[in-house]
Length: 266
Image (cartoon, rainbow, N blue to C red; front, side, top):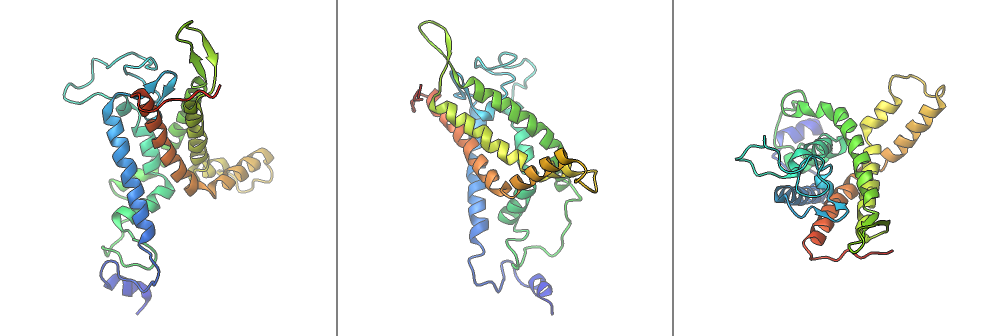
């Protein structure tokens, strides 16, 4: 009997592996769960997401809201009365959809949350595999379109980081260039999110697609090589950017609540 058939006929979790195969999916499960719990809580707060020239990335762009960063003013009249209002609800679906459909994240949370499979050469809790051909997993196929939106978000967050380097003097009302700890936090957030986005498998396919030979297009070949180089670190960027975008919200929130002090470097 083949090893595949042995696994299919074995109970969930059965394996001949002597190593701690369960550790990686457990760490992934805990990491994802912590981020989902915090980001959901932060999104429902609808407050303390802006501090002076700083805007939490969970709320950017602020289409409607109560801070000076809001593009169209406060809560819209068409917002359902039974639903708590938060500016984050209007935009988080985009970066959330990009991460949820990400090639790396799919492999990670399939193992960690659905045990599909828990790890290599470990028995699964199901006998059949339906793939991503039915709802809801068929939605994974629109990852490329979430990528286009994610690229726009990188530009918006870069603009937020730029604005975070200009401070208004409370006494004179004049705006001047400066660097605070928050400026660095929001700038690093753009760098890490940019690394995650520009290392995306879909972007690599787009840059190198529709051609059988890249040697005749030196600019495109260079772009493909660049994305391919970043792609080797896609998992690293996925985790670093996930942690840092959460920390960026936390930093702005703590400063807005008066718990942390934003130190001006110059």
